[in-house]
Length: 66
Image 1: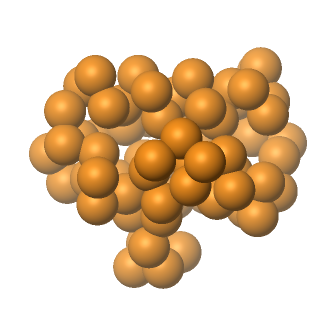
Image 2: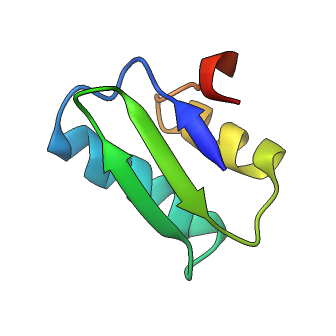
């Protein structure tokens, strides 16, 4: 799955995003690209679950990369 996260502007943000996703799926693999504000996620969680935890962490996703 790919997500666009406008608020993810640095690698500190990327760590927070990864931590949020791994709170739902500890085995999730997250490849973050803060420069382009995108992440690729390999997970067993649903898109809705990921979007929910990201929003709760302060990193809402946009549908741009859906």
